[in-house]
Amino acid sequence: MKHNSTILTALCICLVMLLAGASSAQQQNVQPLSLEECILVALHNNPEIISSQQAIISARAGLTRVRSSYYPQLSLSASEGITSGRAGTSLGAGSSGSDWRDELDLRLSMTLWRSGRSDNVAENRLGLGTAELSHLNTMQVLAEQVATDYYAILASEELVGVAEAGAESAQQHLHEVETRIKLGVTAEVDVFAAEDDLARAELDLIDARSGVRSALARLKFTMGVPYTTDLQIAPVPLGVAEVLPSLHDGVKSANEKRPDVLAGGMTIRAREHALAQAETRRGPIVEVGGQYDQSYTDWDANDDSWNVLASASWPLFDGKATKADETSARAAVRRSQADQQRLLNQVALQVENALVEIDRTSERMKAAEKSVAAAQARLRGAEAKYRQGVGILLEVTDARAALTSAAANQVRARFDYQVALVALQRATGMLSLPGSAPRESND
Image (cartoon, rainbow, N blue to C red; front, side, top):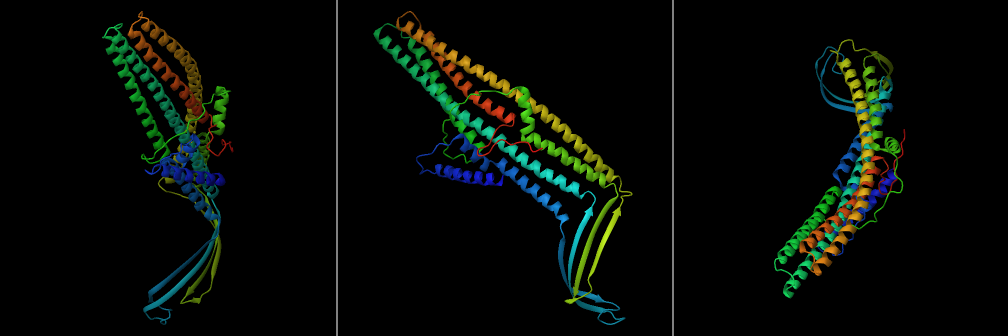
């Protein structure tokens, strides 16, 4: 896993350098980024990734701290100063005064056994596993969002093409109307309808171009790059799912592979170990350990000392604090179990919604294809009738607007289908990150 992280980091640094160069005013040829490259940049720059990485570092440090009690502890202390002299001191029996002292103490100790220590280590180990899985979940959520924003840009760019075709068609209609007016075969009032249609087509084009800018801004935000970055993306081939999982198989896959589900299971087990520690604190609390001391006074060695002790203690009265800790820990276990059940219910809903969305967008693509074909035929018929003098311009402008709308719906349906495929992969735990494979359950 560390090897994969090193590779991802190296790739991300290269991509960040590419983006930094692209933002320079002197850079003329900006290389478009693929979807995988955009995801890599986001995994390196997005603040949520940085935050979840710090959670892993903190959890790993906590585990190291609790594990330290299994190892010998060696400490060195030194003191220097004036102390009061009493009987038996270097000033003589029965005398009083002050004495300058230099002391050095070397202590070696080790706890051989302590009640609840293994549960504490297990809790922190599971906490580290939860942090790692939560980090992976954050990465997958981010990858899904990058893909969604990426496809939104591609869709917006195609919508610009649709709007440009509509504006060009409306411009041709206006030119044709003006020609027919000059020839005296069309009433001058038709020019207003043609100009209105052209104005509406130009408004559609303005909205489409604004949509590209907005989509680019959203992707930059998701990737965590500066808003001044000159970002261009490369087109990707649109895929079609050959085989879709059943609802049962999809939910089963999600429960086995999704990092948030696995993290929820680890959280429950960590809370159970915390409860075991709370129960242990009711007593008896047993500790077995040893200690060796070597002291030096005035830099002269004194007699060393050592001990090996076993101790047991019971909290006889603590104002019900121990009982309260146990009650709180048991409530935390039950809360984690309820949270996990809610998550499992949500996962099943997400898988089903993703399957429904794929079916819906698939049918939308088929319907949109038929709608575009019908709108094209309608426009050709309206244009022919108008040229022959047996139709009115309103039929032509309505048909032109209908064709633009149908083509735009077709574009949205195609890219919504791609977004639905990514959402299904994320919901079932099958969404792989660049340079990695889907995570298998370690339970």
